[in-house]
Image 1: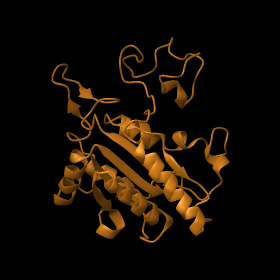
Image 2: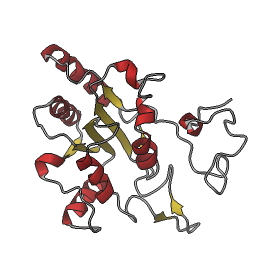
Image 3: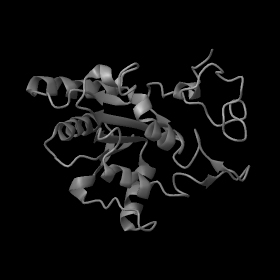
Image 4: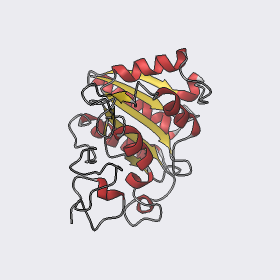
Length: 235
């Protein structure tokens, strides 16, 4: 199996850096081939000025080869750091990740289909706040809702199986003992990363959506939130 681990954090010795090192080592010890993109260390330019470029093609080759994509970052203002958002903007180009045409229908493949179909995507995210704040009924909403643009709008849109984010809270309060526990938790998660259930987003089919890409009236009619787009959501 092959993985691409993309880190968007400026400090190599940070909590994120240590978790990345533990995770990459765990995968390699399990026999994985792991490519890394440490965006700050590599000096990746996140600015989308024009499409393409040798740096973009190199990253696309890494993505293309990977069975598992890991994006790791600290939660900044409810989203990814700009350098990682720019990586997605530049690397996930039309014709590569999206706007890939289905020859049978002539339509773009998306939402459960697309240029990256067959891959799995794991998000590892750290946050300074308390666990309850990023849970259902928490002031920030669940981490799945906070990261909806990434999980549904990027991973699932391009065909990847989005996995439940691996969330680390209280990120500013980590001593050596807790660091080892967090690393062990990540190792445990990675052991089952290719067999765990994906987030059950609905595919874009006429069974669920009309031609305006809105849920049909009979599909989860009592639900107005994002969970209506889960196959497990019923009345």
